[in-house]
Image 1 (cartoon, rainbow, N blue to C red):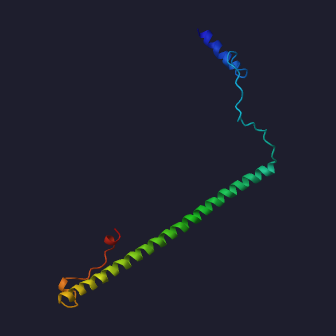
Image 2: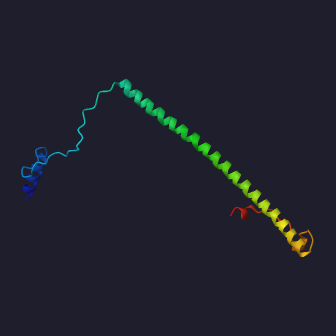
Image 3: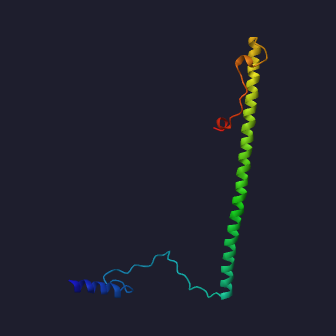
Length: 131
């Protein structure tokens, strides 16, 4: 039995190019791509290609760094504008709240002051506003 296995292995290894004698020959796939042998390129052109590849990599690295810095500045600017807008809205709400209390006091006959409501000035708490 080991001799039989050895013969099969030897048979399959020696006859890979010819194919198995009992197997039918299959035509090659119609979409098979047949490539021509590569052209010989001069060392100067080959070196120039590698130099250009290296320059392209360096350009990509510097461009990425530049765009990263530019993006950080843009994000910071947008964030600052957002905070300024939130602060302005909070101040407007505070002023409109005082005005509405004055109007309610006027309608109730308590005067234009907001002291009747126990209203005290509270500093703007940004943690509550930004939630």
